[in-house]
Image (cartoon, rainbow, N blue to C red; front, side, top):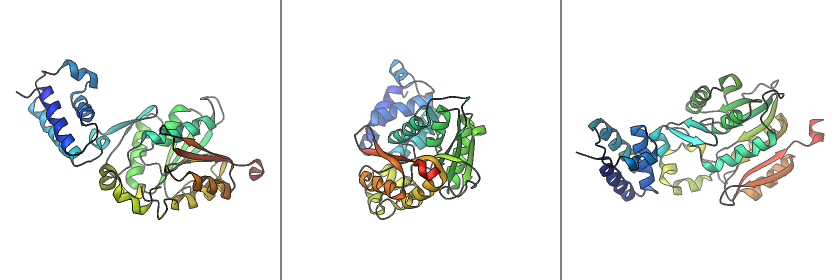
Length: 290
């Protein structure tokens, strides 16, 4: 008989051998997901016998995680800000650092108010939909355009919007940057977590990223700034109120300079939990809006 505690110990030893950080924690998450219980409940069930079907699934999950496939893809979902998103291979897994981008946009939009005038937000390079959907979920006045060039990302954003009950306030549009949004449609705020890893650095990233996650969502060109040089002028032209973007930990100076060069006002950076400049934003100056 294989008990829960046996699986926990063996799985932890296996993942540790494969170089996975926090192997005990991750095995607990996989066990809890498989059994449909809270992680802490596992400690009340150490002697629980495991069925063969449960063991088959867990062995497959451990093998995938040992190959350094992202845990979120294995579990099929991830918590982000105040929402839970389904995730799948081929689309970048949302990171906690990206919640700084959501918070910056929410602060700029103002308090939640279902009776307020609509606020139109464009989430460029939506991926799972994490940024835009978190904003829309927290602010009922938001109407969201989510754009991406990748069909898998677009389908996943549509799925997550439906799962969160936001479909009526979200338009998912295929195309590059802001181009899929008709010129006649208003845009108040542009938000984006674009590819910003310099090409030369990608292969040196942790295996979960370098081996598995889509290059399209990572590769920012020679210095990591290729997309920003296209996005910021387009955002300045289209947005009525401003723009916020996520950046790499060492790109703050370059991004502040680019925001100023394009013509944004009140440009400033926001820090992540480790003290790195993670988000840069600016507003449209009054003279630019007429």
